[in-house]
Image (tube, rainbow, N blue to C red; front, side):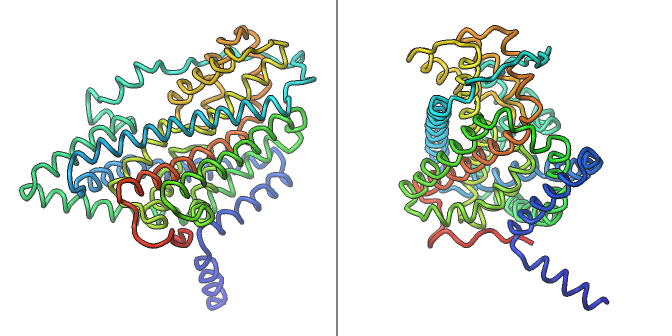
Length: 423
């Protein structure tokens, strides 16, 4: 019996992580469909897994970022990495908006939809103003930023500390070695936690399928097509094209390595929760050196919202079609600009973008009451739409990091390695 159990364990752990997560995803969907609402009892297991992942985020980001910056040849390189990252993130977000607008115009998802039986929501959260978002990057209290998990503030302090270590030279070598060792240890801890990913994914997907069901998509089938097809096209053409153009690497190899982060993003609906495995894939699978991976990817998890941008733009047109609002070229341009600003202020947690819709719909004449109806209509099945939006976001983080690493000479030699097979 023991020999049989050992054989099963060896077979299980011998499978690549992405295959185990994919199997758990399908089994979770099947279990949720069979169990129905009773599958909600599994939610606590998924929540526990997400807590484990979130536990890693702050120490992993901080120690790998400081270690990466301290390993740079010159502090001036930080500015080039930051500018290129921001430029690429803004460019991909803008293109994602175009995909969302084009898809909604072609498929007309709002045609024939009525909201007579939808109850409005009283909770419409406003997006964080851009000036407040920028001001919050500089923490008043570093320890408070660590306690609250404020990633942008932690990145800012980590970059400064890493630059200080770099400028201090030989004097700071002991502390630099400490952060280098800490980075290696945190990656190993991430591997340990990721062994629980299939269990967490199974529970999360079963709970969602049991509570939402497949029937929820009937009334919004066209909108689902806009988000899923538009997102797939954006990832293949834009993200894959960036890897080919800037890094001269195979898009197929890139997507192969990105599978584990994508599957985890799909099940958790959170870029932040996916951050540890995204960093692991970047450094160990794509051979992006820590100097870039540990700065560009955490930054992307907070400001790169390609999926959110595509979704918000598509829903703006969707709402206009429902309420008979005629949009001009100027309106589409306004939607694009507002969506960029809203997506930057979106928290990397499930369904956050749904409650930021008011800012975009307001600029095209949709009233607050009408916005509440749209949100009430979308809320019941937004989780599964949000799962795909998160996949797009995480893929964009990896594509930008790969591109910036290639531009800065921080991409390891040789082709992109086989998919990350932690376990």
